[in-house]
Image 1: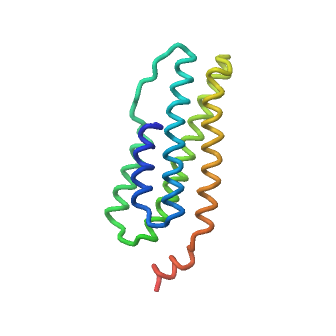
Image 2: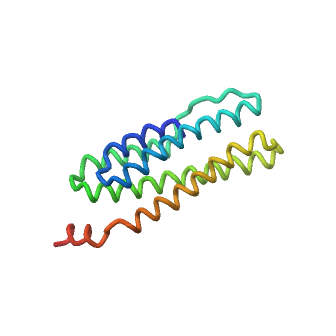
Length: 149
């Protein structure tokens, strides 16, 4: 999931026209590369080699993004969409890490496994708060007036 999100974050960072949004996605892309390493660290702690698998939810979010980009020409509206898409992705990641941590706890796997996953969860929760802040800071009223003359 994290590897695929690195690609999606890179695309949204390049396509967003709002500097704060673009920079936020670029920063989170870099952070997400670290998340990949944390997941690999947790696998190694269990004596396992991680396998890359498709995540249907992430693929669906990416497909939705491409369809919206094809259908919407207004850059401000796309920036708002990117914020919403980012929040959706963060919620998926948060739920995933919560589930993994619950499973690791029940299996008593220990801190070597749970600590890297917890770091990722903490980062994702922080990023979701930041995206919410960006969404509130953006000028939705001006966008609404633009869309409904």
